[in-house]
Image (cartoon, rainbow, N blue to C red; front, side):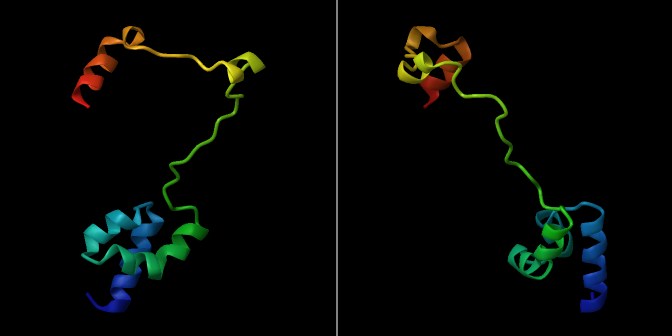
Length: 88
């Protein structure tokens, strides 16, 4: 694929919502190359995957919860949590 054809193809994939990781696989290009050359386009057009969210409510309801955090013991774990505990 020629550079100009490749660039048009990559841009069309970006516009369709493909991630740079996916495009890297499709066009057999290094992710860093794509990030360096097309990352700004992705960022400016909101095409990057957004995975971080935020918490709307408070972490603690009152001062007592802050000063006295809950204590957990093995018996308070669910069966799934106990199974995971044993695997680790």
